[in-house]
Amino acid sequence: MFNFKLQTILDVRKTLEDKVLQEFSQQQKELQRENEQLQSIQLQKTALIDELRNVKGKTVNISEITVNAEYTRQCMKSEELQKEQVKEAERMADIKKEALFDAIKKRKSMEILKTKQHNRHQYDLNLIERTAIDEMVLVRHNRKKEE
Image (cartoon, rainbow, N blue to C red):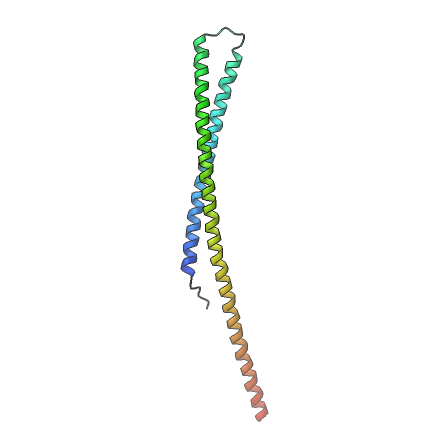
């Protein structure tokens, strides 16, 4: 029976990989939320700009234009701030991705070591079995010679 001496380390690495994978997934969701929020701001800004463009040639109260223009400026500021948040979320996602790749590499290296040790164990068992069979054949051959 094969017993991998470093099985607890392999189990810990699998658990760590699962944890890092979950963190990466959460960060990806966060990045998606930030991008959706940015798109929402951009759509709102575009709608306000279109509204200002449609005022051309119409009689409109100046206060409405002023309010609309101010709101458009605020949307532009919000858009810039949101772009920064998206960049930060992308940076964090990249960090989590690297951590995930590192965890996968560590787990796979342990699994490769386990496979090599298992193959070596199987080889040793087969060698012992072949040796025993060879000895039995030799003993039978010697008995037949004596008879």
